Image (tube, rainbow, N blue to C red; front, side, top):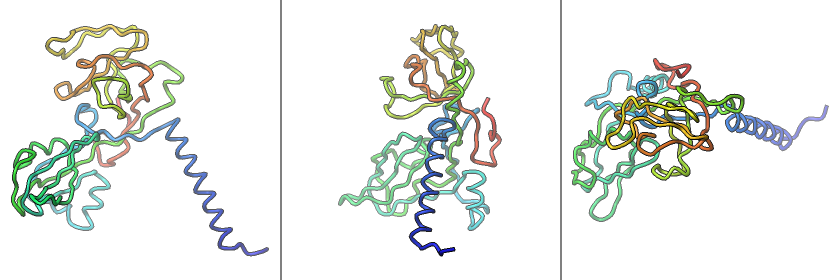
Length: 258
């Protein structure tokens, strides 16, 4: 038997890789898609990115334990300090985090740190405020939001039901940031009525959905910008049902989402 050349072996490996990637992409597009929970609007069912201020790291934050701890819990200790004197610059993102950097008077920009939105309350000064070299900007644990699988095929075979946790595109909903995705609990499906458990002042306390409308609310009513404020979700925006939490592993919410 003729010995394969290095080029032939490389071509076979490349073909295998392309096929594997194609299968993975098809699986993601048509069956189950991973999704990271960015904010706390679905607590306590699902947790988004969040912080816990803490002056010093625990013993599990020493190498190599910290890597194992992160794999199991998604929890990492961060100690962010000003590299030089300047003004605190904050840039919002669309993933439940903000970018933090110090800008010197001469325009130099320090390293960028990305922290969950609730870390804003822990900053020593307001955005734009003055900080000194070496000043502590944030110290504590940064915990990633739950990672879930979105079931993209189920609603092709049956209609969505009120009570299910749904993921939908914000495109075309004027009050929302365009081109991203939200996760909320479906409170009413087409043709159904819903008496709001936590109505908003000046807004309707009961709603009835149209032919292709869905009413979406966060489980954490006090920290959720949802259909109570901006109305129903069109059916064309639905992307799928939240199926299960798959990471972090050491997570009381791991498993099926109810």
